Length: 98
Image (cartoon, rainbow, N blue to C red; front, side):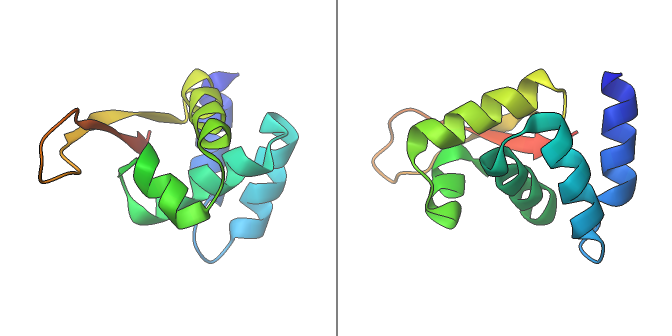
């Protein structure tokens, strides 16, 4: 089921045909935030949760719940880490579409 869902979304989720993919995804995930996050990751490439929060203006817990749901569904995966601050600190995980 997971592979079937992934293949359907890959074939439908093109910038020129987002409505069909969004409809299918909403049926599967029942989360508008997850749809928005997935669409952003597909269009922009690997992003950190901080970048997603900044872009979507959704609350941090909502973004993390959406990322967890997408990860559980096998639609996104970790694509490395990125230093977001010049001062150092913890590196942010980059999430990319599978």
